[in-house]
Length: 248
Image (cartoon, helix red, strand yellow):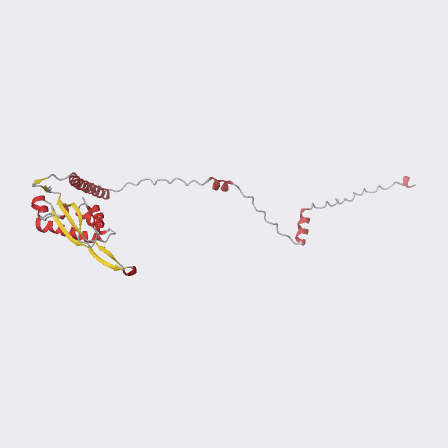
């Protein structure tokens, strides 16, 4: 494929190519399939976290294509999308290693040619001298960018309104709101039964009193013995003097 076939004047695509990359074409195609159709920023992120070693070489080719678009054609890197990315087989380097019984086996060291084509979202690609419309994916990307810009504007207006409300709230004394009562935490049934059950009071052993104290207590508790009433002596009647007749 000649370079004139992919010139910017004919196709509107920016091209970059790396030849004789020390990797097989199959390994490079697995990585290129992940970045095909992405914008430059997403493609670089994908290549940065790719576990394959050929991703570093592909990232260099992508950088070269972006630089060509900026310097040679004045395109913005933010508007560039990977239109096509492919890998062709290059020269196979042959090496040999010794094997058993004096024999030798061949080692094939593959190479590949990596090509990346970029297109701008602002201008459609030109194919066979006619400019084509921006594909559906590009139009969806531009629509998404518009939606993002509109959402950012709405967020800005909401933030300004919230700031004004906060300023007015600071100027006016805030009304005290009644404290919300927290619902009492419900105890489980087992815990409730445990709390309701009353435990019998432990009886304390009576302190032993000495014998003398016991005797005093017994004497205090016994009823007092009734003493017999003292008899009053009877009043003596005065003796009547006997007459002489009675005496005789």
